[in-house]
Amino acid sequence: SHKSFAMSRDWRFFAANIASAGLLISAVKFPVLSEDPLAVLAGQLELGAVVALMDRVPGAGLVAAISAALSTKFAVAESKALTDKTPFYNKMLLVGSAGLLSFVLFLDKRGFVKMPF
Image (cartoon, rainbow, N blue to C red; front, side):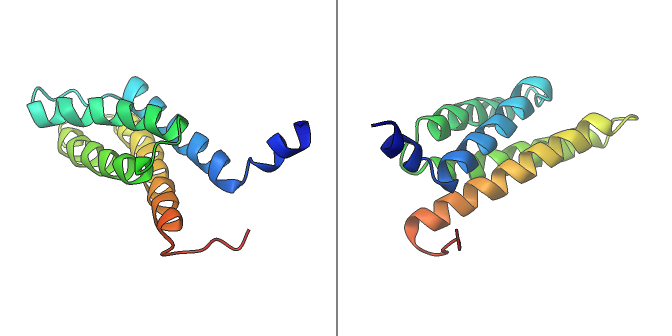
């Protein structure tokens, strides 16, 4: 029934979609430009985490948090050569928020934290 479908959309549903949107925008609009194979892997992992979060794959929150941390590592290294740091700050806001939200999803699912709502 329609009512049971609406009830299945708890805060985790919306948090996963917000985190996946943040990672998607980060990976597509602000990609890591390094030729380092690990940086390329981090960008691919970021996109894979988007799909995993949207499909509610078990462990997706941890994968997304790790991909956000890797993306941050390479973005910080690249930012040192930038004169206009606005794209870097935008990426940090997106990746940081999505990574934190993803990690909270992971911890909540494992029972380490409980959200009051």
